[in-house]
Length: 184
Image (cartoon, rainbow, N blue to C red; front, top):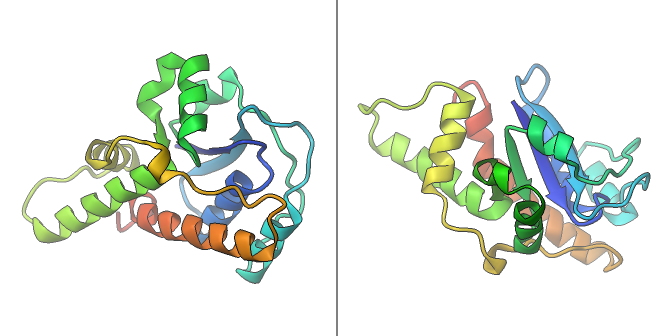
């Protein structure tokens, strides 16, 4: 499975989510991760403040090079998670054929949380036993994306904004993590 995180420039939120989720998944996870920006800017390093927060959490932004989201990336992706509703809508404008695999990170995380809760409450029911099946079930339980779910862009807003943004993203990553781990 290829999971792609998307933000505006691919220098703050999406690379943070990509690197942080890789750290949370740990070695040996059967999930490939990537990030991109829409519209994106090619060749830029990770935002210094977000990289510092990532380092504080035990990971690293070293070596990140920003990329613009492309049709090839969209075609290869199994799940695309955007940080803002406007990004979500731009993806639909450019690639309407990939609507089913594009979600906002925050509403998708809520759907994942709902799925985990339902599974805990209804253990006797049959549940998907693959990552793809769990992702599909979580997407079905997610509310529609909207601006109310936007994750604020911390770029050039200082360390407090970066820390706040990272905390929000971390919370969402923790919600989706059970979909991608062996315990499901």
